[in-house]
Length: 380
Image 1 (cartoon, rainbow, N blue to C red):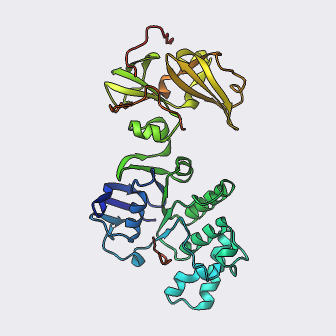
Image 2 (image 1 turned 180 degrees about the vertical axis):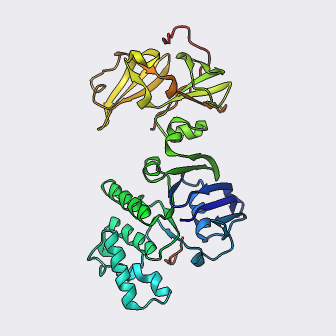
């Protein structure tokens, strides 16, 4: 196992700053996700780790070894690309064995190793097929096998599930995690998909505009976002504007108590996940009353949107209890203090009172309202 240290990494494409002073420690033998929207610098960071790009400034260290100026083929890192980059004229087995061929491994030995790795990724008996004869999921597995046969210290995955149909993603996720744990590989995954990051990674580094916004365990991004932008990126979070006084926030819903240590002030958003709200539960502590504007069934849960003092709150429950709750129905919601959090409210023109709820040549190393509303009662 080898840990990674990125120290003040900056990379510019001409006048465009793609990555801006990224400092990040990545634990050895773990999976870390670089998460963010398109253009945030995450793939650039991956290429800097792989040695496919040279930083404008900053250093890359593998353990105690500075590899910033070490060529890609001598770093011990292998990158698997989103578009697979398989040789179309070679069989799956020969694609997998290509790296060993470049190392001068005898033909019989590399074929044996290629077949063993193909078996490991669930492609037994398909070594003779060419990429055009394989499905998208099978091609992704060939690309992964081609990386694994080199026995890298660091595995770098660029959007590994992006080109797969929904029904194939779960199987590929499990395969990646099984192989990673089996070999104790230090793995960095680039993705723009929050669910993918949460399922695959033990740590998430969230990037916006080339800069690191938050780094930590997946759960913290849902329940303890560091910024308004983080809260919005993770979707469906209820954001209620308020004015904070210590552990109390005056909001359109009334006065809410928030946990000690929640950031921001005096102008904040109070955040609460839909699944943390309760329905008609007298044990919930702080309660508000509103009217349902819509309800729906989401397969594993049901959801209702409840309007309280002009604020729309989304609530999810893990059954179908809300499916038949029609528009106009009065509903009491509980807001447990431990489920609330605050983030600084960014002042900018057009900020809504209530947010919308959205919830090359192939190779081995390539490429509001803030005052309490007197008409709203909050009961504790």
